[in-house]
Image 1 (cartoon, helix red, strand yellow):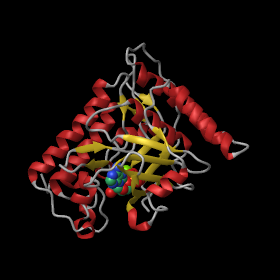
Image 2 (cartoon, protein in one colour):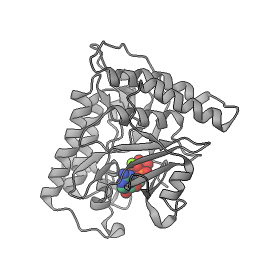
Image 3 (tube, helix red, strand yellow):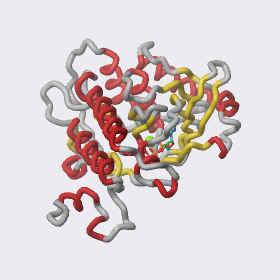
Length: 308
Ligand SMILES: Nc1ncnc2c1ncn2[C@@H]1O[C@H](COP(=O)(O)OP(=O)(O)OP(=O)(O)O)[C@@H](O)[C@H]1O
Ligand SMILES: [Mg+2]
């Protein structure tokens, strides 16, 4: 299991909010601030916890949440009891399974968050809220979620070509053909459009904070969609230059000034885009400890005099 996220405590400061016609995201932001209390709430019973989560999601989403609520039983049926044969992959927060929803005849990807993993109720709710309120052809669709008992499960549209990571960086393991140049550029352009939507169209802007090859999913035609919005955060508004926050993201992709200061701007995502772009043109992973020492960090290596 990968555990390469950065967790570093820094001050979390509230930002001023501006009035906006795009009420949806603003509600999400209000939700973002409210969400911290989910972490510390204890529940008398499973059903009260489940009811509380569903009520908060519908209250914070103000009726705009299109995601379907699934029962655990429905998702057991869809994934054949989370059968290892249905497993599509595994990340730092849990396993992802292919599933089939009988009632809608939809093929889906079901991410069962690890109960002992780092992603808690807050990230789960941020993801449900963000993906319910943000819609773009280069962002993955959230079909629904399940919060039965201890379960925290996200149900996404199924992306037949998996993640960019699978086609770019671990070809010996995945046994995939290297992507041709045109496809690489198509993926880069689509992923950039997804970020542009978050930064320029969403109002207030949203900082994605987890731009990396494994979070860029690919459909049948290799159109890219950004996934994993649990770390997404509302960006600076009302003339503010940054939002101060805990540093979170993935080592190697995280902008150095954000990692050092905790000051987050949309440019932090642009840095991560640059890192992924380097991976796309070199076919090398940003951090690769199997390489000679001076080549282990891709950014340092490509900017060193010997390569330029
Ligand atoms: N919607 C989807 N459709 C098809 N495959 C998916 C989908 N979502 C995830 N996957 C597969 O599951 C794998 C694991 O995804 P996940 O988001 O859990 O972890 P990750 O992004 O690899 O790592 P991390 O947890 O560090 O972000 C992906 O690399 C991809 O192959
Ligand atoms: Mg991911």
